[in-house]
Length: 419
Image 1 (cartoon, helix red, strand yellow):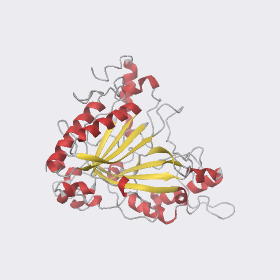
Image 2 (cartoon, one colour):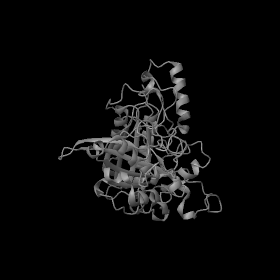
Image 3 (spheres, helix red, strand yellow):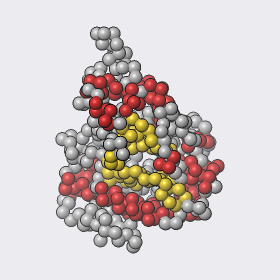
């Protein structure tokens, strides 16, 4: 019996509402949830399709629980072994996202009583994957290494990787079950390089859908591009390449190989927050560091969360209301030539360090059609003078090419591995 069928108590009305929520996920942003909030008794019935133009886990609503895991191919594993692995992973992800058993070997019982719980599984390739599979000629130019930033304190052992998986679900056991299943599926073909766990606010925990808060208490993702905007796909997803060999955007064909059509690039950063130092700041100073009110995310220049920042307004003292080094000012698309990325992060807490401070912060994940036009210019500017830099530490980093979604009968990455 599938896990979905075990949800016998879910009524037809609840299931219909969840189906509408799944469709509306493409219009949600900044961790927004369907309105009205999903009742706790029906959380398990939410499902996201595995097949589609784009992989799941990019525009779907941010889940309550997440796992990020990177693998390196084992010595001797190449293109054939990678293709077999991606087929196994895709088969398991499709079944688990539908609330079904992952196969005859799936007898752990971890998520036996649960439905799909809006599970999403997303797969990506790191730069080194192409060297180890003799596919360098198919490696996108956009996958060139990220530049070094002066504030980085990166741990190489928790950065990069040949293969990357993002798992999200509104149930922690369902998310862990997927993590465990995919780890076992790797078999002898690949070994874990690093793994990180994250969380967000649970759906239904607030009176109305709203932008999620991070561990600093700030609304995180207010400036996200919205799927309703006419250039959303152009900013977030790699376009298909016309027969002429030139992508629709007019950029060089080498920057957008055909196998990446409908895909995106994920920048992943483990950002530790120095919470003890941050929490010593008075509220007014915290708001000046960010450039927004903590209570509702509105700019210090007034309005609501979605009001545009008035970057030129000065106060009675002649000083800028939003300080010159405020995080919101420096990272605003208008201050970065329109550079935009879709933020979809998780918070993390990995206990208390030897010095007594919390090992906690943000698993930053951003999506864009080209990281050299999205993440890189914004991070360069933040690196030069962001007031928030004194309260965060970038400890790990990765860049991954996430191909488009698999069609019926396909596995993720098939167009690359069988090219």
